[in-house]
Figure 1 (cartoon, rainbow, N blue to C red):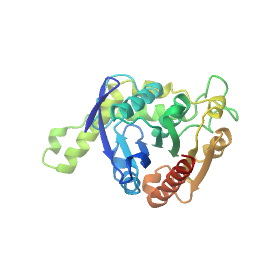
Figure 2: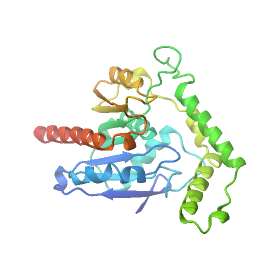
Figure 3: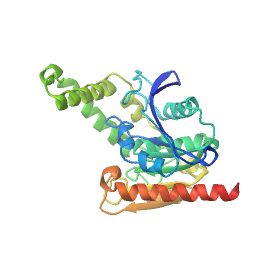
Figure 4: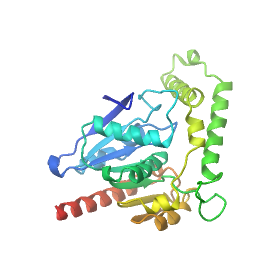
Length: 283
């Protein structure tokens, strides 16, 4: 289905758990950038979480999947506003659990910082929030210099340049279903990178400072693959957030959804069930 939120038309999927409504928290799943959309979560995390009794909300972030692709608005603050507007448009009024994969984790953590009253908990699945490659042990008051933000922007620029210089001839693939699908993905990626401000907005992303991280309220579960380039940020993040548990998956890299799907689902469900039990006891 689609909902109108923050001036755009968002593609949304809403899976309902079978618990009584009063005891059925909502889990919002947030996907990563560019080549990702809600389908990566719809076919991995969403079904088992819904079968465990939770409502699960997924949506294609702006410019991705079947959501509108405006020319601007790919900065973190707008992503946070989009999330709040989509949740409201779906009629959800209670605090939600946010599960963010990769860039979606960055959106989740910024939401927890800016709107703590709306967030019950955060799960970061290889969610980039710190940059161990910056100069110095911790960032200064102006944020990070270089590091993963610059690296990501450079990578996206290279991809965008390659797509623009080597336009795909979709007509040549007209008779092949898989080729047509690849052509659609390539065209959508080309438009997202070359016809919007996404790369510029990513290049100027401002990560939360240590002081801001220390102000985040509510439980955070940070999940990383031992072989991931982001793994070194896990202990830093756990040390800075007031309430953060860290778990590292052996023999897994950045793509935890692919490398450790069963262990990932089990870990997330243990966290959600523990939080739900605690909330029920306190009620």
